Image (cartoon, rainbow, N blue to C red; front, side):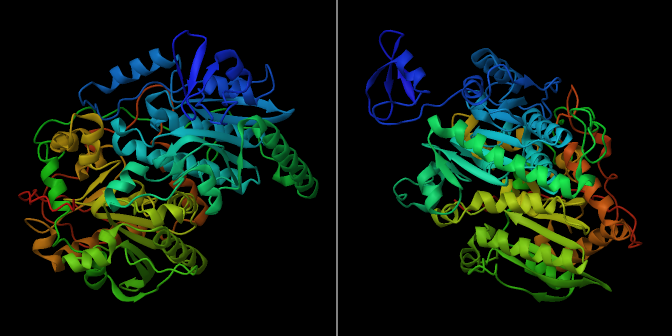
Length: 616
């Protein structure tokens, strides 16, 4: 990074403090000739350096603006968008299109950190997915150049869903035998790191790039430890096996051209042997699964205060979701399921205690269950790392889900985590890539998947177990792109605004149902699940049966197609906004429905809010 000083024609290198003539720096591709520090590039300059001159063509259509949850912190979200556009000259945080590199046709998505920190929102996610669609339609490789701080919290959980939207588009390119390449630039964190930055075929890191799931400040605050030298740097990632290569900027174009040449030769050989693999051309922006644009519904707008927990007592609901007496995955496995047989280990040398799973039954239906495990006492919570899965935990879950696919068994996941493990060891072991692989694989599992958010659904750590055909939430569960405290610390003057952030994030079960992310709300005993764990288990059992049973007769190909359509609709598929009407929520509170295997589970009246038991 450089800073302009004195005369406009001069810059000072942030790496060595050398005073550099700006034209000389630009000729050197914004790499300091004295120390080699790589300055950040905007997307237009990145494209100028990479693609053949005159070959770039932007995607023809851009999705319209979205403000799906009416988010307001110290500024309304639309005002922040306007300022970002005025400051960068770009409509969004990613520039997408087709081009040629060394004569090879490609589809490209290039992120720009200057635009709201390169954050991933509904429009940005839809644009990257459309770029992958175009690559699939044209039968060409996809290159994504990442620069992002993570998900765009002003769009709530819908921004989190973009991790799936793009990952499943990458999965379809994998299935078609088309090369996908990500180029990590500085910085690449959070939702982008844990999805399309790391689940491509090849991952290149530009010299000086940093990448991780949790940022270094968060890791330091959570662990209280000094970080290793070069933590999360490109060379650190290379030493720990998380990238294929580190490439200095002057060599990046040539390296990409060489990779594209190899991929083109291989694809020609495949198509000579298997001409049926030639893909039909689809309209740009169409869903590869259907050939039609994904559907979009109106935004729900701000919820009125006191609307069943959606806004009036969101912070109280957070407290209940974190209550230490709340039933855990093992509690539900004992009360809601039959004959649980736990299976351990990731088969690579570790067994994460924060994730439990194995074989179980619901009556005569055999299935695989995987869930986050917290605990009730301080000792149990500490032993289970507060339900925060390490990469080994995500790999264990993935192993069990792949086992389910081989055996033809449905999968049920129980989600209850404040987030993925943000520790130093987790980052060294590839936390972002582990989450990314779970998301990508779950999008294509050929068996029914039902996810139940039983307590906290914290960001990417929750999503790693929640790419499902049906997503249920317990009445007092929450599901969010970021914790209220974290959101308040970033967008408000301090974390004391957490209650206000909880309301703005739209994280309660009625909120998520209204947004279309959750399909149904599972009632809890009064006042909440921790008051009667056995009754809570019975209610969960009935809800899972009601939603799983209709899926059992759906052919595998249709399951995958519908699942991918489900998550694609969370993007800005066409100009306008996203979301679903508030009347898409379950019925009004009432007594539990009979267990007929078909009836939705209604929502009882909300109980009183409990204390905030969040670990600090």
